[in-house]
Image 1 (cartoon, rainbow, N blue to C red):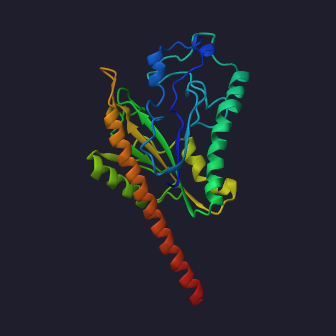
Image 2: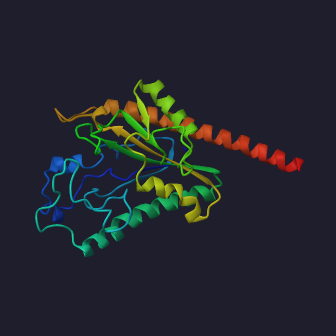
Image 3: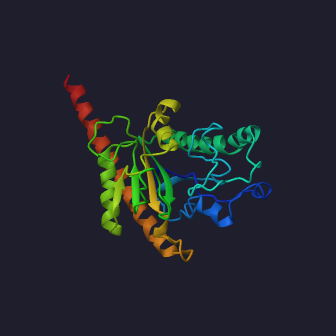
Length: 276
């Protein structure tokens, strides 16, 4: 295992029985509004910590800002109303769900990062892990999900000068090339998805926590249809395992590339300081 923290904030589709009657969506529609199978993570042997959601994003979205405006959905991916009329969550309920689900989930991530920092790791990698079905448009441009997308808060132009990246492009290219070589699929960078709330939060964790380790973060989004056929509603477990093994290998390679570059940088800095 490496100092890699894997986070699956939309891995649960469950809605408690006392809330189900208030939802206008069917069981399948609720399920499709999660990131199915992102709770099955056995192949990610590189991660020293894994955090999975314990509630549906329709109850409280763990990849949104912790306020009553952002963390709660009114519509699903197809524009269907989530709640029966008059059964929407109250302000008090939303505040309660934030305290019950959002804050403990993110505190768990903080605890993992602080533990890894205390163990003396110089680099910590955080991975936000998602999927999206290819059966619906994702934005106003009517773009549909590609095979896989890696995000670092940048733009689709991988050579822009944006300085607020969660991880440098060079390392994303390392991961991109690894997945392309292993799986033979097209991998995009920052196309459609540039990173959600968690990626921004990860990028600022070092300053928030005042830790010694450097933090790098990437968002991974793969096409759910790669492992699940929406027409026949069948799941290909073998395809999931193969994909996750490739991602695990790619993350190991990317982490090692980061550490190698950090080591070279430190040696260069030490040499320059000694010569002054």
